[in-house]
Length: 134
Image 1 (cartoon, one colour):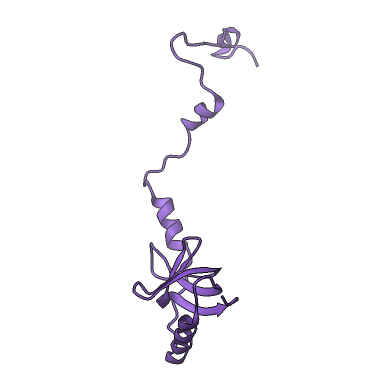
Image 2 (cartoon, one colour; image 1 turned 135 degrees about the vertical axis):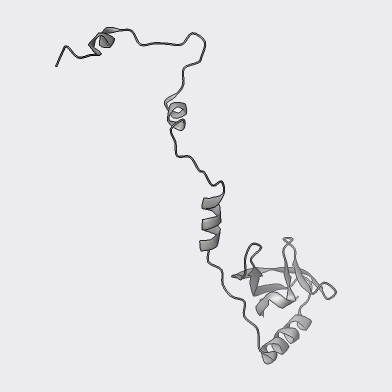
């Protein structure tokens, strides 16, 4: 298949710029990558699709049981806590479990404080189990 319109170009040397540095294949490909016309749209879709659980409201009897368990706790005691962590970005949250040693039961701020720096508000506690007594 010779005699084409551009056959003379096949024998020409490859052009190399004297003023611009050679681009890597990655840089060259980046020029032709997809353009995101709506900045942040993909993140917004992912956030909307992210699953959160609904908080539960404890019956009065269960609240009384938790209150009694809370009042019996001591500093340095190891406990297991199941609690609800509200989501910072949307309605709902997640149920988490924490096992740790109590540093303080803060009656003023209504929180359990742990030696690792974590704190859990009383209102978010679903289940509280003392594991050791001090």
